[in-house]
View 1 (cartoon, rainbow, N blue to C red):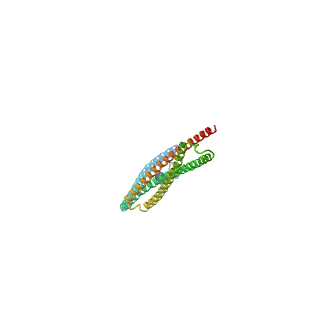
View 2 (cartoon, helix red, strand yellow):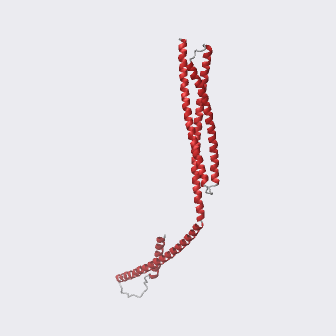
View 3 (cartoon, rainbow, N blue to C red):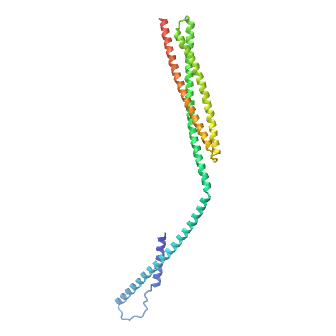
Length: 279
């Protein structure tokens, strides 16, 4: 933009100098009558050359003056800009010094926010694991219900056979195994009930932990490190409880599998006994 302005100003100066120095040819000047046309043309050409050289010199001087003036104006403008920027920097430094305490408080607040986010992330993991544990518990309950139905059917068949056949047909070994199977089923029900109670306690603990997280949000500016440590201990305790529940669930599943295998084996023995009696 500045170059375009320079070019326009130079053109204006050139046109002005040219108009000031240009003198049109006056035919009314006194000349000899016997002057030839070639002489007039030669003189006219020389006068034009001298006038063009003057125009070039004037243009150069005007251009140099114009450039110097523009450079002076630019330097003055830059000095003003530098002074303005220095004043703005001084004001900004004063504002930063005044706000140092506020920035420190904001840093502490950001630290507590990060701690809260980490605790919320852990809480989400615990809730997810709790949901998986509940789903596994439901599956185990379905297996227990199915096994109870099988045992009930099996007991019904045994009762019918006892009424149909003479006492003592069933061997003492089968009776003992049947009794043990019923006792294990009762133990399994009791273990399942205990596990459900533990899961309910775990849910209550998680609800309390949620309330603690909300309290931490309200007291994030108090720098209560002991409170944060207590929450971390609660998280660790809940994780340990989940591990214990998982181990119990695994043991319960193994018992169910063994009980189901024993049930199948007893059914096979009963079938073989029937074949023997029929034969």
